[in-house]
Image 1 (cartoon, rainbow, N blue to C red):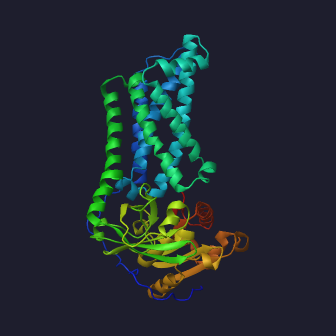
Image 2 (spheres, rainbow, N blue to C red):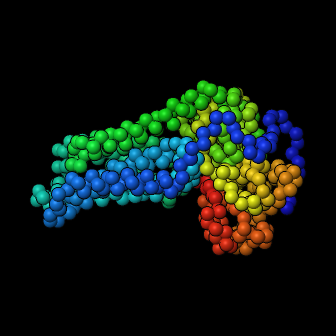
Image 3 (tube, rainbow, N blue to C red):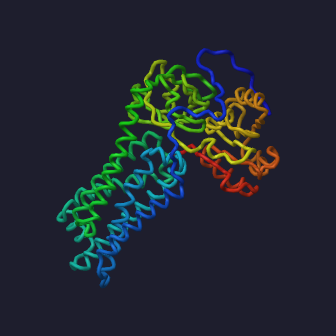
Length: 459
């Protein structure tokens, strides 16, 4: 293990240790288990299929099969849209039980499924109606768009949805900044709203009765939850806690720690390993809430975040002035000590992914080993802090340095550094490529998948 020279003393709040077992005041405890969440989504999908089944006495001929397929995929797409919004609505039971990282993966998978369902819906409905009316596909498409009720709005919603799906593809997403991706995704709310009236106006299975009532409840309930957790609650938290920038402290090339002060911060119920979405009330930063992890245990008087220059928003954080107001949403995430089931723990991180691990390293009970992966020594963060924590706690810190070719097989390298690797519980955080490689290596080394808890720093 190597450590950097101790930094010179600087003003401002310093990280402090939070006692193990400390429970913040007012912290809600309800968390929805991932299996239960998936089960509820599946039950809803079965109910949607039931709507089609009860409203379809018979399917006859090619036109009937195509139209029937269009109705099924349209219903499922109409159900999936608000469900996907709810997954990312920052509902505390989902964030706490399922975890933001897993919710993002579910959302990405569901988004691809939604785009496919909408595409099949459009194609099969137009094709089925064209067979029935004796027209070509193009002529039938024009007829449907301009002469069926609410279809112009539905067409605009479909184009917005397909466009968002295109920019969310991995190849396109890597070329976008977080801010651009965030603003483009706001268009999905408009797409869902535009399609809603079309579903009620032309959906044969939603013409009235319980089906229509359930549809209204699903969409308006989603809108209400979204409005509360994405708009009203952050505004109320801002009024109550009054977060402001206290200090911006350089940590390394392109990396700063941000200290926020405020009132009654213990009432936020934040835990090491969690993150907040921060919206800085400064020019150019007011309209985007970006996610940043706590890099030290939460303190009743301040919160510490460490930010790496990964785009326009994060780069501008380094220029913030003390006193800048901050609106915070959170805390979010299930990447906490609540996951811990074993005494021997490995924390493995790279890049800015070390930030939540640094907070966990200070607070998790048990026998801890932390491994920080980096290509160069200057890319390592918190070297002195981690060494100090390790000395106080009797824990171990390793630095795994060098390019991939030099390090070789990650599983073999970890086995050399961490005796009894297969018996450890693992917290893993970093760039997506690292988390995927490390998860495979850990499973191959005998670590049970249920003991690998990971959070990626991608969007």
